[in-house]
Amino acid sequence: MTIIKDKSIIDDAWHAHQDNESLVDNSIVNLSYWLENRDSLKTCQQALGLLVDGDADIHSFKDDLSCFAIIAINIPDFVDGRAYSLCRLIRNQYNFTGEIRAVGDVLPDQALYLTRVGFDTLKLENDESAQLAINKLNDYSVRYQID
Image 1 (spheres, rainbow, N blue to C red):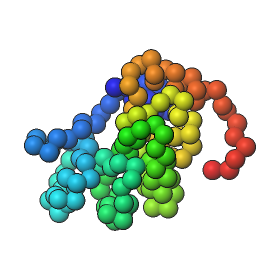
Image 2 (cartoon, rainbow, N blue to C red):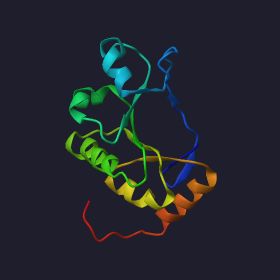
Image 3 (tube, rainbow, N blue to C red):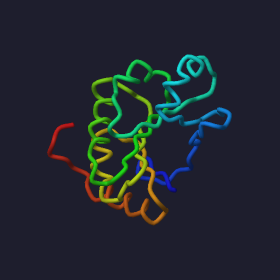
């Protein structure tokens, strides 16, 4: 998998935490793990991220947003637009200033739209898809719509 940020391919500093392994710095935990272990995780000293599905109920974690350096939103199918709405809520209504990453079925053609709603980073299948996404992002420098 390849990560793009600011129209560039970057190294991924984050680790997808598995429920049966020890927590390490820069771990992204899934929502169910967070909810089960919230009290102990809030006291840990490691940088944490949260993985949620696009249909996640934001009320289950909105009060915990300050605990995370990154929120990864899973797009299970490229036609599922709920991740766009969730990202917009997290970014604009709940004022999350950390990184929001699109993961899952992310297509290069979606790059512009994903970044417009507040995604900072996109996790694409490979370098070729990432380069195509960067090209798509570079195609437009002017927007008519307000943010």
